[in-house]
Image 1 (cartoon, rainbow, N blue to C red):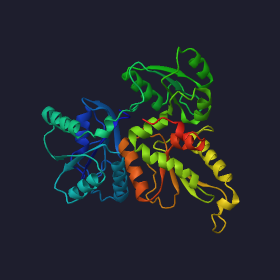
Image 2 (cartoon, one colour):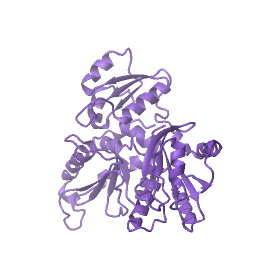
Image 3 (cartoon, one colour):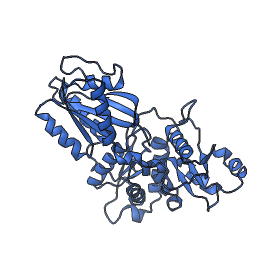
Image 4 (tube, helix red, strand yellow):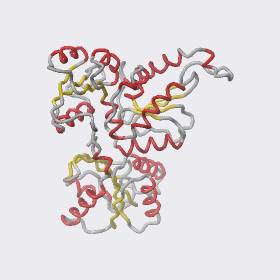
Length: 377
């Protein structure tokens, strides 16, 4: 499992979405009222569900909201589709029911349809839970480590704790990988980059795998034997949540960037960036350095002189552009807090727009000249 399963509830106003979410969560998550438009922005609740594990229940605004802000609320509800793993559609006989069911199916989202207004009791909730378990996408069961490890393997994890690391805890990808290694019967050895040599010296043999933060790829590669497989947390997430082959090809598209081109750095979460931010500081610096080194005769490509510099846009959280035609490349974050559905949806939009897409780890590996060295799950 690479993250919580997102289960979103869709339906017309007063179809019973909020009541059902509250009943499933066993507590008041959403305000329930007979007044149409009570639910405005999507409301999210983290919960553990039997047979499904960590989940996020998402209550959405009614798709027939005709209030002054109704159009904006419907737009926010439509955005939820991209990150939805399972949709619960409450049918109330509204003309919009069929259109939304078709929208969800076109997005390859499994849909559990139930009639609105039904009795909500232990039996009906047990039936809903069973249907949700049956609808669970197979992609969510994809192993985070693939075939890179076997039981008993010793795996060294290189985990920088810089200013971007949260105080008092590890970042989510590190936690997820450590748990996956323990589940696989492996022996994780954790260190910071400064302690890597000491960690290696303390082992009786070469580690079976080294997993590093992508930002220290090159330094770690230089410090370990060429016989030792190397990958990163971001690469593992890219393979678990998306199509690793598409991302590898997207990384190679960096070679085609020219001055004046536009790159989108897409973050699935929102955070306040610091001076060492990998997506807003380090990757843009690497890209600009690469493009600045392009010889003039190649820069111009036989056409009129292009504007100097690379244009880089940042999209955080849900702010992923609808129109991608202006971009020459998209570099997505590791998506540690995003669903596989969101990564697949954004990848699909990029490919339909003819724009290469990659992720942080693979982009850094290519920019540092070691992409072919990286072990893929």
